[in-house]
Length: 246
Image (cartoon, rainbow, N blue to C red; front, side, top):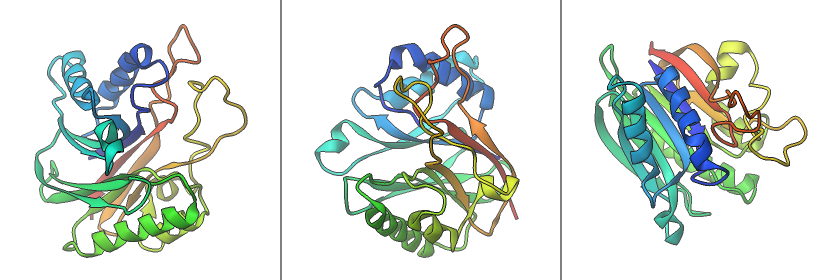
């Protein structure tokens, strides 16, 4: 089963130019589940992505979108979402308590049978103490579930080795680290940011619990437009992970 994550950068930064590039790579990748962050709620960006993916794939990819806005007034405009091409069994969400951030849980039925809990989130900006507290809320939420295969995906706004990532790593495993022995070179920024300089950072992750076997992990949504090297799907690269239940 293929699972992906991507911060789509809402409708900012040349959205009308890059959106078909984003969907074309989504269709080529064809994940059963993808978590997206910085999703524009009004207009309904997820609906457009779902419809365009079905059109470009000639009906092969049919996603069901599950959205969750941020808390308070920011939730009118932006949130997170899970697009699933497999049956959705249940959904839930969690207020992360600061910076209007939320997490969502979408339970899907796996092609080989059984169910998988997919947790999607976008942790806050103001600092490691806030992000670590939000990560602890998510872990506590996960602990209250029955022992099911589970993945945590999203833009965590935290670098490898940071307190937030160390906290998550005590319970979960980074899929890219499991597959390759190291994290990617970077997931942000991309050439879409015209002022981009330097090596960048890893901010986006797929974590798995002990009931998941990681078969593959790689950067995704990293192709630029053939005629414009600054035009890419988003200001973040995504991740694609192939997993199986143990």
